Image (cartoon, rainbow, N blue to C red):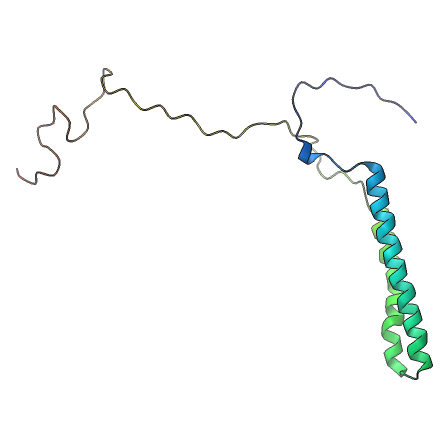
Length: 128
């Protein structure tokens, strides 16, 4: 096993984007494989029971399952630990709203809003 030197990280990483540990991933794939193979054995036993009972073509339905399930079980068991993202970890960037600061009423250059002092036609008068 080769040990790589650790790189110093200057930014915080999101924990929610971390992958499951390798041992947990392997255990999950093994469990899924064993469950699928147990289902295959059940299909095989059902095929033999239906054939012995004289069910005819109905015994072919679980037989097809017993023949197809191993392919999918192996594909699912071997397919794991692919990189889910090519960009690696994403640095934490808080999504904060922009702080609102109201304009100062006595600041130079501010024009009075309608209805304030200095307005020749007050809002809502309706007369000219």
